[in-house]
Length: 329
Image (cartoon, rainbow, N blue to C red; front, side, top):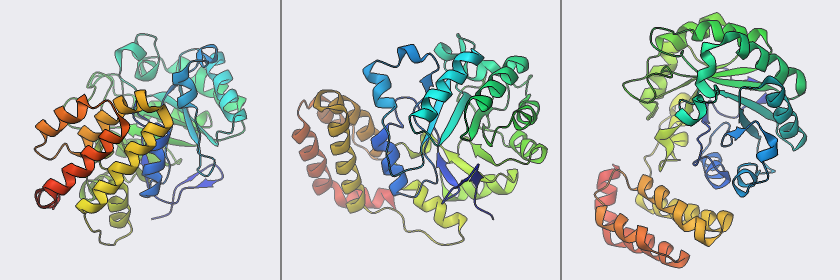
């Protein structure tokens, strides 16, 4: 299967990282790239650039100069979205991604995210103004529709391609479904048949076997991974191996330990110790989510020192290495 091309950019792999607010910060994006993600997308930025002076926005705009940089923007005002895209491109973004897939209430209340799927005319206005405002490729992330009764993903996809969108990611749920139930892939298959641009299938892809099955079912060009890689960034390596027809070796406990320690150190450095400690807590929980670790998590969440967090992880693996490896296998 051919590699994915977005404008002039040829992606090195067909598994890419979904943008996730509060998760796909620079340290996590760099980690996923190390494990073979073909592309990572920044956390969502609101389109009102007047609000970008906050520390949160500065951190979301942080960039890795060595990586292909895709920045996601969200909003409902076409002119404001175009201005945000222009500013991001001027700041070095190689790809602008438009969010029309987020189901969060605080986003949808502003008629942004997946709420836009109810308003095709507004969708068209946004896409045309954004694509006209920048010379870099513009991609789009959508859901299959607003609700199971209003699955207009195929129509939105055709409209997007007509507006000059370079690639499309589709989450296999409607906005009304949020993250409930199982993702459905028939609509993604219909979208792939309806357009010629690259299509990425997203939703419930949590193993190499699932990635292969979804690609076979949908005919999509690649897969976009979201919640499944929280605490499992090595999933990119495993899926890439499967897509290339090879075998993969499951992660070993020694590697898990080193990845966790490296990631936690990067969070401390990126955010500063105070905020880094807090953010490291949720990542630690994700890394150990498959193991019986309630007591350790409670202990870890009470730690107020960066070195103490690192020492705790090191000690945990030393004490439970055999059990961890059995569970990982």
